[in-house]
Amino acid sequence: MAYTRKNVTTLTAAERRRFVDALLELKRRGEYDEFVRIHIAYNKPDGERGLRTAHMTPSFLPWHRKFVLELEGALRRVDPSVTVPYWDWTRDRSPTAVPWTDDLLGGNGRRSDRQVMTGPFAHRAGRWRITEGVTTAEFLTRDLGNARAPIQLPTRADLDRALADPVYDTAPWDSTVTKGFRNRMEGWGTGRGSGSWHNHNRVHRWVGGLMLGGASANDPVFWLHHSFVDLQWTLWRQRHGNPRYLPAEPPGARDAQHGRIVSRHERLPPWNVTPDELEDTSAIYQYV
Image 1 (cartoon, rainbow, N blue to C red):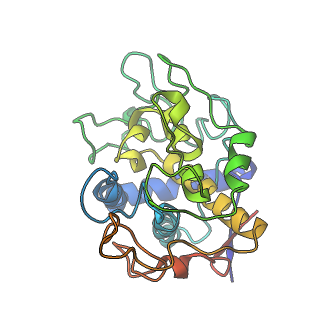
Image 2: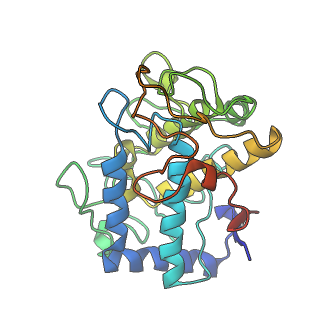
Image 3: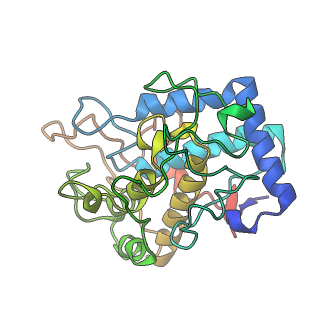
């Protein structure tokens, strides 16, 4: 029987507590940090050689779908009642509202060093030490809204522009494509600065701190964000008659993307699963 993922604003006090407690238990066991290591390892830009699976590639959506499912499975082994809620950043846009409350994710980082000082994931609470990252800092950081160069979260109109595109992805299957749902959702744009970040990418920029790099899974909001992105893939498929993942076949030997992206029926590292097998997960979970 499929379980449900809820809007984080609808969680009861008990559901919030159980979600937080399960995350903290994974951290205590050392399991959580393995998820961070995986994201760092697969966060390869399209300027590098080799296979890309997590970002700047058609498999951005199925890769993160599987990633969230793996984390969710670990949480449910701790507490079977827990699922990963989603944060609708088109509606809940205040840095002081849910999910930035003391009983959930805690709030913004302090001005001096962006260290999160409130909530269960604050370093001073003693249960969320950062061990995987690109710096030696042991505390969670955030810069909600980007204080020095303020930006806004994506709007409903921004999201609708992505959902309106009927094609999943298109050549050259990287960060430069200007058509296709995948990159409109992932959010790589042209130019520089805040105007080049859309939807998924813009949310990472808005949260700031550790959400800015490959170690972004250190911040528990990562999972709420990607749960919402995953919901959009489900809604997009429903809107357009369940269109398929592209490319259907691997790029040819003379194609610049040969061996660098995952096609529909190829295995998606680091798991033994294909994008085709991840297109419909309604038998596993559903959104409410």
